Each structure stands twice: as structure tokens, then as C-alpha cells.
Image (cartoon, rainbow over all chains, first blue to last red; front, side):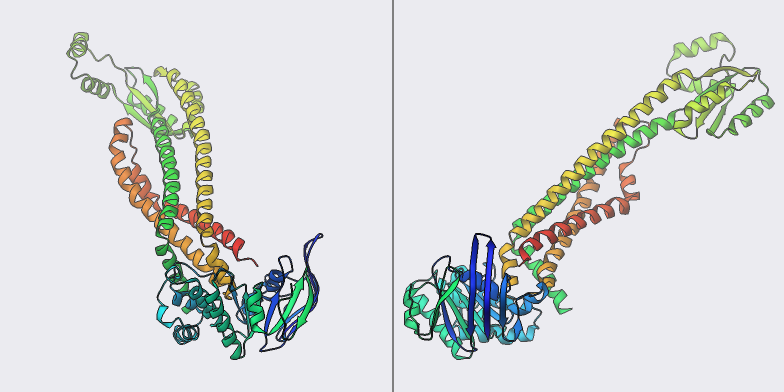
Amino acid sequence: MITLLHVSKSYSNKNQVLRDANIYIKAGEFVSLVGQSGAGKPTLVKLLIGEERADEGQVVVGDWDITNLNRHEIPYLRRQIGVIFQDFKLLPKKTLKENVAFALEVCGASRGKINKIVPSVLKIVGLEDKANRYPHEVSGGEQQRAAIARSLVHQPRILLADEPTGNLDAINADEIIDLLLRINKFGTTVILVTHNKEIVNRLNRRVITMDRGRVVSDLAHGKYLL
Amino acid sequence: MLSFLRIIKFSLQDIARNIWLSIVTITILLLALLSINTMLTVQTVSDNAVNAVKEKIDISLYLNADASENNITALRSKIEAMPEVKSIVYTSKQTALESFRSKYRDNPEILQALRELGSNPLSPSLAITPSNFDETTNLVNSLRQIDSDIIESRDFSDNTAVVNKIQSITKRVSEVGLVIIFIFVLTSLLVVYNSIRVAVYTHKREIEIMRLVGASNYFIYMPFMFSAFIYAVISVSLMISIFYPFLTLFQPYLEVFLAGYNVNLVTYFVNNFWPIFGAQFGIILFITLVASFFAVRKYARG
């Protein structure tokens, strides 16, 4: 599903953020990507969504080699990879429902398709009764669920969660992780980028550990090592 | 079609939901247009005033009182044939007297003095208007070279001074006016450019999210381009609706100030509506589109 072969990336001569990284993730896996600050996790996320290009090596998503992705191809890649972030990235002047629908509208989906998909993804994340509220009217956990709902509208094969629980309390964080596990059960590959030790240990799933741009550990039922 | 309608919806929704920012942006565009049009008005008034003064310039040849009609007609034809001459008006002795009486009808002392003279002391004359103001000097030189017995006197000296003075003023007004208009237009356009960039900057997050969810460039750029179009339409329409009443109110004061000269600003702006406001709309639209494009591109890259 996702292959990184000998991938290196640097922003300057002295700032090499990825060094010969090799990662292979199978379809339907739930993988935690952990590491301290400066490990190269955000750069890896940027490479996977086409925001950055690798200096060396090869990045493949599905059967699509995105190493030298053309700018015009980026939107199509991003419709295949759902992404959620720590800060939710919701539009404050749109309701939760409008935020979710927005992802389909800007891709030219028909009104009929939008009316069919939006309620169903809101139901998956348990927000059907808060669909018409604005982001500031709901909790952080609910905002993150709305962001997850938005990431699901294109029925992505991969869901990339970049520190999704970073702004949430323990209860809300657990709920989000449970939701990600449920989405993974439907067959979506989930990559969880986090530095939350408790969550990683509780999951008992595959853990890839990075340190200073290198993959230092890759365990099928791993723990947070650092 | 669906995409285009959605872009219009996004754009209108955005303008309405950020109504204060939209109002501020339109106000800045409006102020820029008003300053440009104010400068244009000042330039138009000065051009019209100078032209009106130029129109009033004529050169007179005073003829002998006993000059025969045949000789006068021959001289008139000769002068009319000159390329520098626009028109020539002959004033007979009798017409000059009637005109004089009419002019001083409220001054009994002058009329009494005229009666005491017993005869008409005024000479017939030819008033010559130059075809082009700049040709006045050449015309005066040509008229000086005419050798005719019926010419009693030539009234050139004052005109030369006036001509030189007006030419100097016209040149200065044109130069200063152009520089001021250029500075005004440039400043206004920079302000407009910047305000559009600020307006787009406030949508930085929205653009980021659009990219994130896989929006095509068409969907990222077009709503902002359409908003730029809406801003241009509204600001130019408002400008027109404010400017014409202002001109109508200003016109009576202008007529008092330029008494005796036919300067009508409303007519000027009505007759030149499309060249003036069409060009302004085009320029404002171009600037807002360019500013929007570069501002969006800054956040849409990646």
C-alpha cells in the first residue's frame, strides 16, 4: 500500500530530516509512527500527501509512484489519502455539516452525491445530531470527529492522522482512537503519527519508531520505546 | 455549469460571511476611484478653462472709415484663405457703433460724449480667430506682412503676451497634472492591490483546507477571482452613483467661477462615460484579479 525506499530529505546541508528511510505498510494495517521532536515525522506526512518531494529514494502509494508528483496531480492524490491534524483545520464560519460537504463541493461532486455521503460520514463519527452546529459550539473531540468525517468523504484507502489527540483530554483522545480503530476495521489503512505513549502502548499494534530521520525500530506489536 | 454555480455560491457566501472585510475592501476601491476621478475632474476643468480662454483669443484689424466694400471683401477673402485662420468676422462702422451703445447703455456720460462728437468715431474691423491656438504667432506674422491701404491699425501686441502666458500655463498645468494623476493612480492601485492581498490573506486557512481535501486549482482560484469581479462591479457602480450627483451639485459653482466660459462637467462625463468608467472598471478589475491571483498562489502552493 505504502512504500518508502531509501528516502532522504533535507531542507539545507545541515538540516537532513530524513535519512535513508525504508518503510513498507500493507493495505488495511494500523500503524503508529512515533518519535521525538526532530525525528522526521511531519516531513514523512508531507511526503505522503505530496507537499514535499524526497531528495532521494522512492515514495509509492498504492500503485502510484508519487516521488516526482506533478503539481496538477496533487489534488487527485489527496482525494485518496484522508488527513487529520492536531488543530482540526475546520472552517469556523461553516457548520460541521458544511465543513464536511465543503471537501466534496470543492472537488466538483454533485449535490445528490453530497446529500448522500455527508449524512453517512457524520453518522459514522457520531455527529449526526450536531451537524448544524459551528465548530466553536462543540467540544475539541467533536471537532476532531468532524475533521475525521471530512477526511472520509472521498472514501480514502489511507487515513493519515497527524497528532490527532494532541489538543484533546484523555477521554476525548480515547474516543478518537476508538473511532480510528473502527475506521481501520472497515479496511482503511490508518497511520497514526503521535508521541502519546499511553495511546501507543494501549493499541498494541505495529509501531514504527523514528529518530533523527532514521527508522530505528519497526515492531508488529510494539510499544513506545523512546 | 455546476462547478461555475458553486464558485459563484462560494464567492457570494464568502462576501456575505465576511461582510465587514468586504465593505472595507469595497470602500478602499471606492476611495481609490474617487481620488482618481477627482483628479480627472480637476484636469478636465483646467483643460476646459484653458481651451475656453484660447477660444476667446482673436486678432483685430481696424480698417479705414472710408474703405470701400469691395476692398474690404477682397481683404477678407485674402485673410480667410490663410491656413492659420479659423474664422473671420467683419464688423461694420454702424454695427460697431450699435455694439458700443449697447455696451455703455448704463453709462450716460459716455453716451453723451458720443452724441457731442456728432459723427461715428469708430472704425470698421475684422476679428480673426486662429484655427489653432498654437498657430497664433504664425498668424500674427502673416497678418503683419499684408500690405493693404485700407488697414488703419493692427491690434497684435496684447495678444502675443496673452498667447505666451497661456501657452506657458497650459504647458505647466499639463505637466503638473500628469505627474499628479500618475502619482494618484499609482498610489490608488497599490492600495487596491494591497487591500485585495489582505482580503485573500484572511482566507489563508480556507485555501490550506481546500488544498488538503484535494480541491482542484480551479476551485481554489476561481471564487477569489469572482469576488474580485464583484468588488470591481460594486465599487465602480457606487462611484458612478456618487460622482454624478456630486458633479451636478458642483456645476453651478463652476459656472460662477468660470463665468462666460462654457464648461459643463456633467455633459463631459456623460459624453465620455464608457471611455472613462469602462477604463476604470477594466483597470480595477485587472488589478484586483492580479492581486487575487498572486495572493492565492502564495497560499495554494504545495
